Image (cartoon, rainbow, N blue to C red; front, top):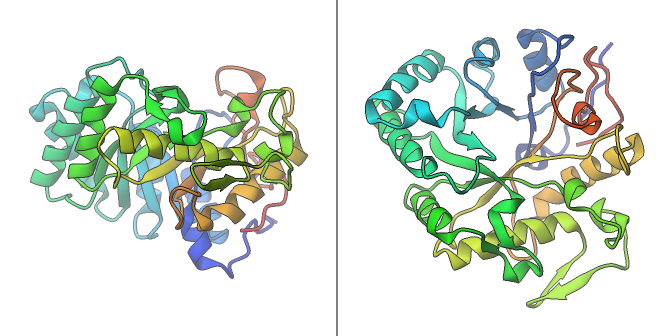
Length: 316
């Protein structure tokens, strides 16, 4: 029996949290089983990293009402309007019954590339022409998009010539900036571990009249500060990935993963000191993925094991 992971009493809080559906494993459940697991646990949103790899999952999502963030990792597929239109016909039109909310044009693409903005512009036009105006186009950045992030109020983009126009595109189209925010990777020995894990700590600090009680808020608010400096103060940040590994490295344990992800779930409804109000965030990831490349920790971010049993107890 699959144990329910979520307490269904707090619907508003659940709507703030989605879970990324990584598929780099040779022992994962079928797409239909995965979607059923999201539904049975009340998980209201899913991130999928490729419309090709995730095609069967997209079909299984039809009619469920689950919100979807869909990635297109290949910027070259969107560099002309004709190509973007063909991409929409192949990857969006067949899934009219799926609630695709955002499309991430690239995931953690180097900010030095000049391809991101034209790809986003072409995709936005192609979606509009095809009648998919409600789908918002963005890109998913990692924290090194910032040249400065401490203190949070000092946050600024490393390359304003690239990110400034992207921020203005997002502002003009009512789109959020998607950001992968990992206190686990930002954590160092001179930071109190409890501060990184949403636990009570004496490491709180003040910045520009705001009190910071956890590292997640400090990181997200540094992005907000950078957006302000880029002339796009109204652009919201959607945390497109965040999580903590349960094994495979220093400070990677079941206990720490449970503390971080439970803390994230409990916290996002409050927003950040700089931007109160619910933060939309996606936990990485649904499953432990045994074929995920990189360090051993990369294979241990799952809320669930491949047999659909919880990796640890989480209450939404």
